[in-house]
Amino acid sequence: MSIIIKDLHANVDGTPILKGLNLEIPKGQVHAIMGPNGSGKSTLSKVISGHEDYEVTGGSIIMDGEDVLDMDVDERSRAGIFLAFQYPMEIPGVSNANFIRAARQARLPDGEELDAVAYYKELYEKMDALGIDRQFTARAVNEGFSGGEKKRNEVLQMMMLDPNYCILDETDSGLDIDALKVVSNGVNMLRSEERGFLVITHYQRLLNYIKPDVVHVLYDGQIIKTGGPELALELEERGYDHIIKPLATA
Image 1 (cartoon, rainbow, N blue to C red):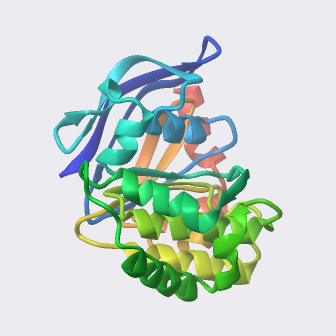
Image 2 (tube, rainbow, N blue to C red):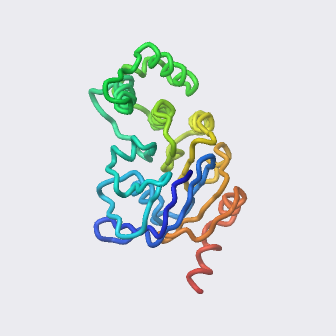
């Protein structure tokens, strides 16, 4: 079972960003995507999750045999796709506990109610594992949170919703080393043969803690190189130019 992306083309405001991208993310694996600014990394995450500002003009995204492009955003979430944003949104007036509870309830069959006692027991266990103070259950979602607190909160949501495929769009952005370790630990707790990960990042440092099975380089809307974890170390040492320049002169 996997997400299979074939010849994907997508525009933003009429400008082509993805230009024939091919990628497969099997369950049980962590795939990392690296690339310079403007290469299409965040666009890919938004297209998979169904953001309305991104127009797919060609290609396909098949998840476990189902056509993702035929689903709206809510259907994609219910089918098991979770996107952790680079800049998580604030939701004033909605507490963390109620937000996550509503999302869990929405995934239950019609007529079935979430067990409140079991829900809070699980929520507190996962908050403790992520080092999140239990008082955060009553705080509005991400309102007044630091960058690290917002990222921990997104990982908490991910842990509570138990998705099949997790897309992390520059989750390391703005994190100090301690927050990075905590967030990475939460992600690693979710690694499973039943779950696939796509980790989008600029920097090798995140991949020191979330060890990828496969690393891809994205440039100008296409995957231009794929390798093992050593590829991330190569990029950290030599940058992207030694891969990109030969393509430009070919």
